[in-house]
Image (tube, rainbow, N blue to C red; front, side, top):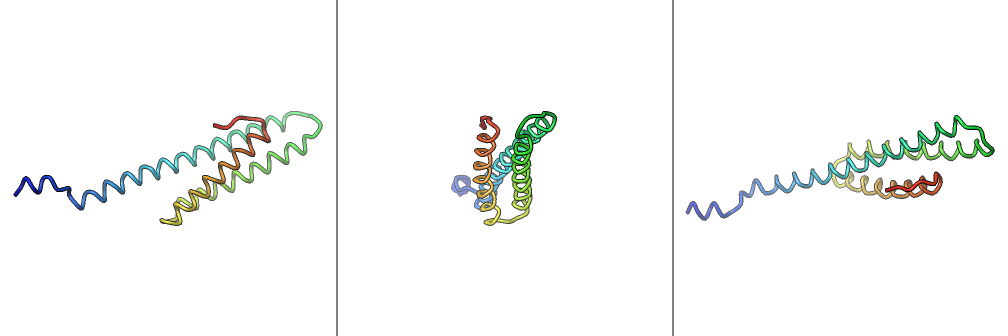
Length: 118
C-alpha cells in the first residue's frame, strides 16, 4: 500500500510548485519591465544633458522633445509602481498594458533620438 502512495503526487505540494513557478515568471516580467524603464530613463537623461550643454539651431525644439520623453518615462515608472501594488487579475492586466506601452515608447525613442533599441 505504501508503494501506491509513493507514486501519487502530494496534492498539497503540487499547487505550491505551480504557484512558485508562476511567481518566478511574474518576477522575471517585473524585472524586465523595470530594467527597460530604467534604461530608457538613463538614455533620455544622458541625451538631455548632452543637448543642454550644446548650442545649436533648434535647441529649444530638441529639448522639448526630450522633456516630453522624460514625462512619458516618468508616467511609465508610476504605472509600474501602481501595478506592483495590485492583485491579480488587475496586476497582470496592468503589466501587459505597460509592456505594450514600453514597446511603443522604445520605438518613439529610437526614431526620435536615432538609436537602436534591443
